[in-house]
Each structure stands twice: as structure tokens, then as C-alpha cells.
Length: 303
Ligand code: NAP
Image (cartoon, helix red, strand yellow):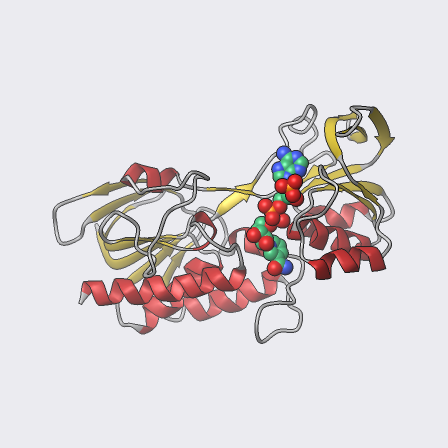
């Protein structure tokens, strides 16, 4: 069985940064991701708050980070970790994947999160047929078409701006009377004259082969209104991926995120966690910072 000092599970911004730092420490490291490197970071249309770049897409930054990470750290993409067991030996963990088995002295969980669903009627049926969770991936198909973007956070507003810029006729639909997103993004929505429907929830997504309309419910008076649309983009937050953490007995908080200390340690010895799967600010740069801290802490613990 192949043996490593540090195995990083997940190759999003945090996992890749942990790989960059671990690689430079001279330890033997492996990053494993069930998909292509980047995670949801690949979907970010553009970032204006990552230091060093006025504007850069998630995909472009991921490619740069990946190039840097694989200089010193092994990276396995499209390989899913299915099981982690603890041993009493020097290599404390046995990691089983869809392709192989490995042993590691320490583990960094960088397993990220996935898009939350509305769980509304028609959502599952029309997924890929007008319902999308990724503006960057699917926005192109909706140029000149009428779509709604559901959500009131930074992601929803940022993606609505991106879709408008692509040439889609986008309307924002939010369940409350004010957005959660940063003021700067709200100002941009106003400046771009993107229509908004507040105090509204999506009751049903309707269509035949493709989405044709949505039924919105006014949360104040309960009135229902059907509006014709070609697409429904949903951006209402994320659910953390904690299945592997739970296998190990890692403690989660009441929202289901991993609890970590200042060194990114979990309650289980030699298990660290970083990025969106953890409690804390969901920002690209935070995940990267946590990756640097975890790799450095793991190195010191191994010495
Ligand atoms: P978020 O901040 O959690 O916002 C989710 C939005 O969806 C909220 O407006 C929420 O409404 C709404 N929502 C949640 N469940 C819903 C439901 N069942 N039906 C209808 N609406 C629902 O999620 P996010 O925008 O995806 O952002 C995730 C994290 O990434 C945040 O910490 C965010 O700050 C960060 N982020 C930062 C940037 C940036 O810095 N530029 C960009 C993107 C994301 P309520 O407001 O009523 O709760």
C-alpha cells in the first residue's frame, strides 16, 4: 500500500493551497479529489476580492493554483475516497478510494460543499432542462432568454450580474424584503437595472420538455402568480460534505460544519479540516489561509 505523510481530501482552493504548502515542507503528500480539481471554485464567474487580481475567474485561478500544487505534491483527480479507517500504527489512517488504498500519518479534510436545493415541485424533474445551479456552466444557453435567479446572498447577486452581462433577461427572486448580499453587489444590481421580485418563494417549476414557467408565492399575502420563464437558476447556499468526517467521529456544529481550532485541528488526533466544510467565513482566501495553516500544523505535529 502506498504511504504518505499527509493526505489532503479535496482539491478546491483550500486543498490545493494545503498541497502547495505541504509540498514545500519536504513531506510526502497526496491530494485526492472525486472530480476535477477546483470544486465549486471552478464555477465562480469572476472574483474581484482575491488579492493580487482586480478580476479573475474561478477557473483561471484554480488552474494557476493546480499548476503550482503539482510541482511538489501528487494530485489524483476523478478518484473518490469512500472510506477512512483508523489504525494503531505509524500510518494512522487507511484510505480506500474508488481506485486504490493508501496509508497516511495525517489527513486534511477539504471536502467542501454542494449547492442547496429548493426542494420545490418540478426542481428535480427539470434539472438540466432549464433548472441550473451554475451560472458559469449554463448561462451561455440562456442568452436572450427570460430567466429567474433565486436567492439573496452574494452568490445569487453576483451570478445574476454575470447572466445579465451574458445577455440573459434575468430577474432576481428573493424570499425576504432585503438582500443578504454585500452592499456593493446590491448597488450593481440597481445600476444594471436587474428587476427584482422580493417576498417571493418558488412554489412550482413547470414545463414540458423544458422549463416554461414558475409559480411564485407572495410571502406576505400568499397570492400565487405564474410567470413564463425559460430558465431557473438557484443559488441559495451550500451544504457541507461531512460524510468522511462523520466516519472518523469528527465533531460538527449545529449547522453541520466541522469544528476546528486555530491550527485547523478537529477533535480527532491528526485530522485537520479546512475551507467550506468548516465553521467560518466562506471565502476563497479564507480556505487558502486555512490550507496553509493546516499543512504547517500537520508538518510540526509529524516532526
Ligand atoms: P448565503 O450567503 O447563505 O445566502 C443564501 C441566500 O439564499 C440567502 O439570501 C437566503 O435567504 C436564500 N435562501 C436560503 N434557503 C432558501 C430557500 N429554501 N428558499 C429561498 N431562498 C433561500 O449563500 P451564498 O450567497 O451562496 O454564499 C455562500 C457564502 O459564500 C457566503 O458566506 C458568502 O458571503 C460567500 N460568498 C462571497 C462572495 C464574495 O465575497 N463576493 C461571493 C459569493 C459567495 P435569506 O437571506 O432570507 O436567509
